[in-house]
Image (cartoon, rainbow, N blue to C red; front, side, top):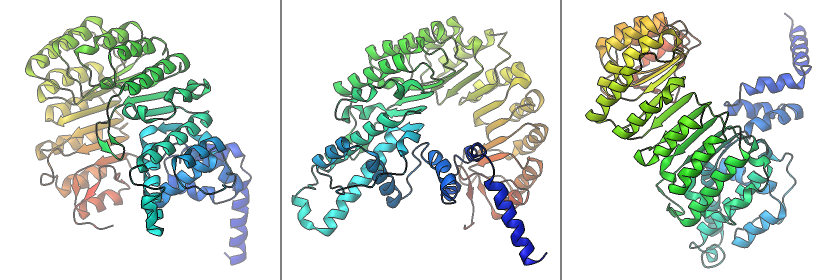
Length: 500
C-alpha cells in the first residue's frame, strides 16, 4: 500500500469515528469509568470528547497519588465555590488568589459517589502543604497568619466550605460514604447542608462508619454535637432518601435513640436490597426485629465483625429472616464452640432452604465448612453464582463445588496445601461459567504452589476471566499466565524476583 493511500484510509477511519452520535461516545466511556488514564486521554482529543469525559473523571474522588494532583483537585474545588464560601476560607487565614477564572464546568455537579473521609484527606493535604510553601518563602509567617496552632482550624474551615459546595451542587449524588466521627467538626452546623431535598433524593448507596484513629485533627471522639448531627442525618435519609438499594452501618456509631431512628429508616426503604451490619450484638436486637417486620425487599444480608451470641442466633432462627435471602455473608465474625454448635443445629433444621440463594460468603471455621457450607452447596446446587470461603480449602469442599455448583461465576478460595492442587484444577476445568477467580494463600511467604500448578491453571482458565492472587509467583509462572492471556490483577498480585 502506498503511503498516500494509507493516510487517506486513516483519515476516513477518523471521520467515521467522529460521525458517531454523541450518545454512542458517552456509552463507550461508561465502560472506562475506572480507567482514569484513558479518560484523561479522551478529554484531550477535542471539545466534544472533553465534555463527555470530564463527568466520568469527576464521578467520584479517586485516590490522590501525589501532592500535585491533590493541589490541582482542591484548587479546582475552590474555583467552583461562590463568594460566600471563598470569603469564609479567607477569613480563617488561608491565603487564596485575589480572583479565580470561571471554571469551564461546574465539576462538583458531576459527583455521584461521595466519600467524606476521602475529601478530608485531600483538603488536609492541600492545607498543610500550602502552609509549608508559605513558610519556606517567608519565615515570619510562623508568627503571623500561618501559626502552626491554627493550621488545623484552617483545614477544617476549608473542608466545611468544600463540603457545603458539594452538597449545594451535586444533584446526581448516588453514593454517600461518611465516617461519622468527623461530623462534629463541621462549621456551621452539619444540618444546613440538607435544606435542599434533591441532595439526598437520588441516593442508592449509603455507608455510615467510624474510624478510631489519630489524624491531623486529633483523636476522634463521640461528642454531643456529633451524635446530634448523626441523628439529623438518619432522619434526613428517612424523609428524603426513598430509593436506597445498599446500606452499610457500623452499629458502634449508634446510641440508643439512633438505633430506634435507624429502625425507622428501614421502614421507609422499600427498595433496600443489600444490608451490611457491622459489630452487631445483643444490644441491637431491635434492628433484627426491624429486618423481619420492615425490610421486606431485602435479599442480601451480611454480618461483619459481629459476635453472634446465642440470643442473636436464636432470634434470627425464630424470625426466619434468611428464608427469603438470595445472598448471605458472615465475614470475620466471632464464633465460640457453644455458638458454633447452636448455629449448626439451627441451619440443619432449615431443611427447605430457598433455592434462589445464589451468593454465599463465609469466613468461618473448618467445622462450619463441614457442617454447613458443604450441605448448603449441595442444596443450593447450580443456582449458586458467587462463593467466598475464607478458610483453608479441603478436598471435600472442592469436589462438592465441582459436582453441585457448575454455574458459579465468582469464586474466592484459600489454598495452602499442595494436596488439594490437583482436584482444584479439575474443578476449574468443570466450571465453564467462572469469570472471577481469587486465590489467597493464608501462610506467607514460604508456602507457595509450584510452577507446574500455575502452568496447568493457565491452560484451563478462560482468557476473559479476571484473576486475583496474593501467592508469590516466580517469573516462570507469571510468563505462563501472560502467554495464555491471563493477566493477574495488581490488587493481590506479587512476583518473586521480578522487576517491572
